[in-house]
Image (cartoon, rainbow, N blue to C red; front, side):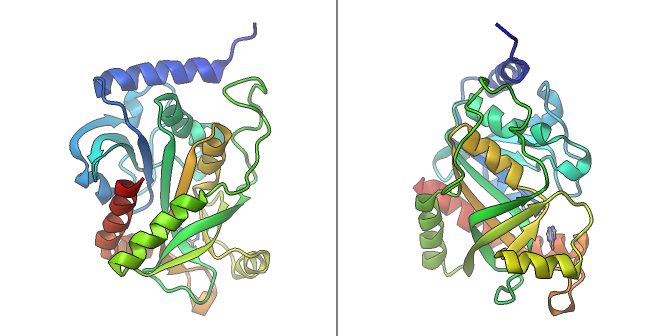
Length: 276
Ligand code: HPA
């Protein structure tokens, strides 16, 4: 039988991570986006494992992305948090970006919460809003499952209907309503970056039905759906997208808004995790 390199690599990575976690079995995976890493400080009894300590994992080079796993308890649930993520614009292949998601699945995690900071294409949105992803448009031009062994870790072809789990979306909306946190529900468009978009691109994306835009998430969610994980996606609207109300986004602005909205972000995600 032909070797399945991805399967072998995942088994090796999982063995190292399991040993570091010492019998701890995470049930929920959380990926924290730009400026949203502070939620990891709320994890009780944390075990920290830098990405670089896990064989076959790439490390994070993006600003504000610490680049480590934090395992422990959040809101009574056993979580494995990625404090920082891997982006395509850092030079990672699509499979390298998706790798930690498959690794979470290998560890037995069935639910994934992905978060990021995003620009608002929808003019009714406000900076500081959260947006629960209802669907995505993958405009990265890449797909992590392309090129994988068709008989590998999961089937080659799989549906992306309800990729963002309707039940989890409902729970996130309930938490937001009860906590008085302003949320939108919208379609997320992901691209490779690292240049921000042009105003013409933003106008085009609006015509396609996109509400928010950023440089992450789609490839992770495709990988999660490939192996059957349930996904909830939450963006912080850190800026209006380029050209909307004359906006010209900067990384500094994204991080400043993330810092301002940190408390509500932590409440939203940890209350959601509690109800999973
Ligand atoms: N565009 C792309 N990525 C982003 C943005 C944006 O406006 N804001 C935060 N990440």
